[in-house]
Structures are given as structure tokens and as C-alpha cells.
Length: 468
Image: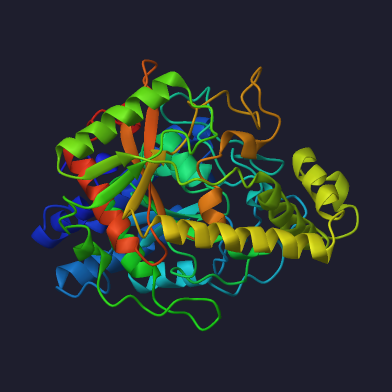
């Protein structure tokens, strides 16, 4: 284990609990101390509950003492994005329009599974309002910042979760991903973020963003990601679109030998402008994979940018949700979200069905592509993290967030599993992520290839939690 629990993986904590070398109370106190030290600047948390967390840690400590842990991650400090219903805590989703003074009596499937497995919930992480964009700031919680350089954005919309995990403020978190919202901040913050096959993690209530929406684990290692996925994939009757339970464990699947499998490497999907330094770092990581025995071929999947269809699906979902808000909300929401709200109202049912047909055709196209390639590898992001507090890089060519996230949102439309793992650092010391995409239902394969990336390109021990 590393020198302090704040820098440890969940797997390392569990091994230390089992050996009696560390207790869940000690690990939780360390996480809370790190939050106290770092979060005033980073603003990764919208709510922290120290006493609730310590009570849960004490109960876990007693279970470990008697040899009766209740789950695979018993006693591991964790957080959830403030998009998931959490019994006893308000779920405000970054909005000033949601009344906190109401009964909060329901756990979402995600929070219910985390409690059942004994994870210590430290609190809830920040999100842009209704998770609508790819950076993390909101009228409610202000600007969330990147642990590697607090002047920069951690990405979004699960930027609070990404910053928390990267900075040692809890080992694990769960985010949502409707257009890259787990993978974007994981890439910008130098951690692992996984969007599994749609329906693999049950959701309740159903997202207004419909088939684009996924939940996903965020962690400091692929092993931890797989462990958390095992916890989260239990079927929940409240999600009629949930998949059956997996037939085997993901924590074992990561050890599958993937050497000899066929991988397509697309440096730009055929249409994305990529920062040269990002492109170089990702290409070098792909070369390492080829040297390790993965059969890599340069190949674009051969589809055009589905931005128009994605925009219709995204904005109509936002409009549907916001139309349920109280009168006067239009003046209170994030101005960018207000524009999306207004745009979504302009589309007809026919427009929505046409966009849905485009989404389905893209899924079929990628299914055929994967008959020739086991996985597709791309950069996760085409750019480095940029100045916090902006929806797009200042002074750049972009007007909207989907224009700089073109590697991620197509695979929400296709509902495929996609993971980002660290690939290296820029000359400015900022993390760069590599994305691995597999055919639907191949979550185990995607995790195994990610594990190979991690093994041949170990993440340095000088993580943001080391820094003052």
C-alpha cells in the first residue's frame, strides 16, 4: 500500500483491512481530512457528512474485526454524484430550482447497492445543473476545479467525482454519463472512468435523456473499477431497461489475457481535430499495446459526426425535464441550460424519432465494425484541460461543449461500453486519457484491455493528493 490511505486504491485498502494493518475508521478519517484540506479550493463536494461517514466506518470496522464484511467493498470511502437519489440527503442536481426542504426517502439503485456492500458514503459530489454540460460549475455550487492544476476545469459533468477521486477525497465515486460525463473528467483528472453497456447499471428514476444515459464507476485503478461495477450491476425492479445480472464477476474478468485480440486505432474518428501533443501521447500508448501483443490496425469506424441527432436527443430531454420545474425557473437556471431548454422546445415528435433512427443506425454500423475488430481505441479527449469557469476553451474554435467532446458522445448513442484510462502527461503535467470501446455487452473485454494498458503504462505515484 502507498504511504497514506489517501493515495491508496480500494483494493489496497481492502487488503489492509483483511490483514488488520488499517481500519475503515482510519481510512475514512484520512479521506475526511483530505476533503477538509483540499475541497475549499477544488469544490468537488456539494455535501459532506463526516459523522454519518464515521458511524458507517465504525460499523464496518466491527465487521472486519469479527471476520464478517458484508460486501466486496466494505469500509471503502466513496462518494456519489448529486444526480442520484440518496435517502436522508437532498438531491439538488446543481440547481437552485429544486427545493431541498422535502422528504428524501428513496435511494437510487446506485446508492442502495453501495450501502448494501458497506461502502462508506462521505457525501455527494458536484455537477453542472442537471448534468447538462461537459464542465462542472453550477448556479448552486460554483466552479469545481482540477486537482492537477486548480486554475483548470476537471471536465464534467461528473467533475466533482473525478476531482474527488484524483485528489484522495475518497477512493471511489459513481457518476453519470450521457455524452461522456464519466469519461471526460476521468481523462482530465487522470483516473479510470467507465461507461458500461446501457442498462448494465440500473437507473431510477429514469433519466429524461433516455437511451443516452448511463451510470459509471470512477476509480484510481482498473481493478477498483471492476470491483465497483460488480457492486452496481445487481438488477433493480425499478429500471425496466436493466440488463440481467452478469454471469461472471468483473473483478476476475480484468485478468483475461487479451494479447492477440484485434484492435482498431482511430486517431481522430475521421473528423476530430486533435491537439498534437494529445495525439502523440495516445499514439505512443497504442504502440506500447501493440508491442505487448495486441494486434493493432489503424482503422476509422467510418461514420460521420452524429452531432445533429445527439443535439436533438439531448435538448429535448432537457426541455422535458425543465418543463416540470416551478414557474420562474427559467430566470434561475444556468444561462447555457436555458438556451438548451429553449432549443429543445422547438423540435417535434417527428424530429425526435428521426434522431432516434440515426442513433439506431449508428449502433448497427458499430456492431458491424466490431465483427472485424474486438475493440476500438481512440483518444478520450482531443484537447488538454482548459481554464475553469468556461463551457468551452476561451479563444478557441468551439461554441458548444459537444464540439470538443466528439470522441465520447457517439458511444452514448450506440450504448456501447467505453472506458478511459490514463495514457500519459502533457509537457504541462496534465493527464491525457486513452479510450477503449467495445461491442455492446462486452464490458468484461473492455475492462481487460484497460487492465493491459494500466500494466504496461503504470500511473506515477506522484498523484494530486501528494500536493499541498
